[in-house]
Length: 202
Image (cartoon, rainbow, N blue to C red; front, side, top):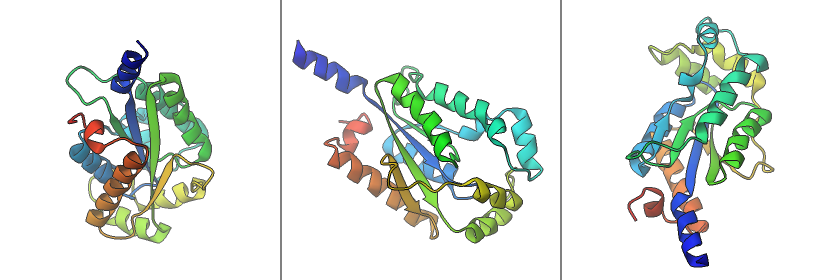
């Protein structure tokens, strides 16, 4: 009976990877790549923002802690919801998660779910690099002037946050994506889990 219980727990075990960092660091691009290559369910964190937040960011105004509170709680609550039948049970979600306490809110969802293991992938680049990228991209409401306000709020994860993987994105997107995938695969192998098991192919 104990062996059967262990098997059931392994089958129910789920992962969520939060791809984080300031605007223009490449969160959506990297997260979609991870979801595609590792067969994860992709969720765009910006979709959970209330309309007032989107309008504020469209004007180049940074969000306050109060603005972000309901958004972070919505992400926290959604991460613990089981994915519908037929969809991959493991998740990758974008979220700026600029401050330690924001990341702690998201950690609450993992603890409440019970069967959910979480990792943050922090995409790191100098402010001037992200300002340039934001100015060059088209069709996104978060412009270059928003980068500075986000860097004012940014609390770069330190070594005490052991569930964070820091990735340098001051290079090509192809190199960044490969680095992220290599790190995830290495982490899973170190913990005794194969990427085949993660992807539901093993």
